[in-house]
Image (tube, rainbow, N blue to C red; front, side):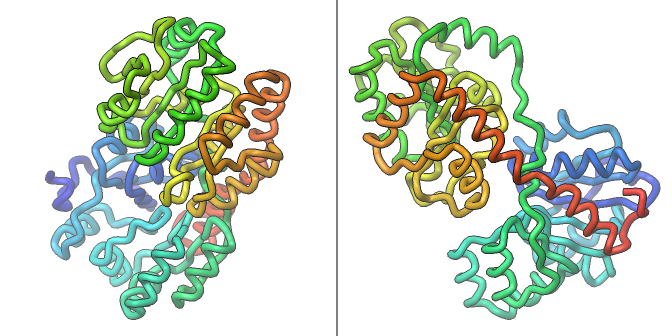
Amino acid sequence: MAERLGQASVPRPEGQLIWIHGASVGESLAALPLIERLVADRVPVLLTSGTVSSAGMMQAKLPPGAIHQYVPLDTPKAAVRFLDHWRPAMGLFVESDLWPNLLLEARRRGIKLALINARISERSAAGWKRAPRMAEALLGAFDIILAQDEDFAARFRALGAHGVTVAGSLKADAPPLSCDETALRALKESVGARPLLLAAQTHPGEDETVLPAHDALRVRFPDLLTIIVPRHVERGDDIAMLCGSRKVARRALGEPITAETAIYIADTMNELGLFYRLPRFCFLGGTLVPMHGHNPLEPAALHCAVLAGPSRANSARAFEAVLGAQGFGDVHSAQDIAREAERLLLDQTAAIAAGEAAARGAARLSGAVEKTIAAVKSLGAVDARA
């Protein structure tokens, strides 16, 4: 709570400090390759985020030389306390989490500011157009804006932002999601040779599509195991109720996978890296409901091909790269999911080739870290060694 009020819990390191802010787990993880690169060049880094889950994860993942703090509440006094202590040479805001008091106070002090890995949806852009003065004030605080793709860049420019360029997605440079090797071995042993359907990062409305796909596939594959990894783990109870008479096991309750288990609900935190390593393909959620999709580069980097619905605006370029490399992956219904899954389950060679193609498609998007480092140096906020 003290950190949220702008009161630092650790001393400021010596030298020119780079401050990076990411709202939660996704943004913080996206920034990790950039942080590692800066620290390797002996540039001290402060990472702020606003959630308990991101704080816990980053405490474990940050390299020595990087510090995590909670972002202060967006009040004038908290912003002043925070900036008085940390005195960053530059602030890098990841994606779209903008705090007016913090941004404008940093700008008033002459701190160089950049919006990196930047994205803005059509809906958000339309909202900002209804408040042009606010948009001009906040976006104008940034010296540069590094957009993930040209569509996002065009929306920022239409709102009057300056210094907008395309740098690609930092997520494309992220290392593959990690997992506990002991847990992976145990899970593989529990699954055995059973055919798998993985539905990852699902939202309400998508489980209701995945379950009929599961039923259709069980006609051809009676021992099929479907694993559902909800985007929000607190939905485990709801998904179990949706399953009705289907035999269910829940990971959060420690229930084992048995020969009778039809649906395994993986309602635990930070285990996507574990589940993406099990199958050759997955259905990726947030795409059959208007959530604009989750990151397809995460399964692709682990050679897991992707099936996805039409709602992909958050990662349009990444979906284009991965699905384009695969040559398939568009699904709109339970029938579509069942059809593609049946084909891949019957042809393991094709499934392996699809995973390899997905990985190649994801690799083509790398390079955003180098472009971001170049932009940091161009603003003269850190030593040119970085």
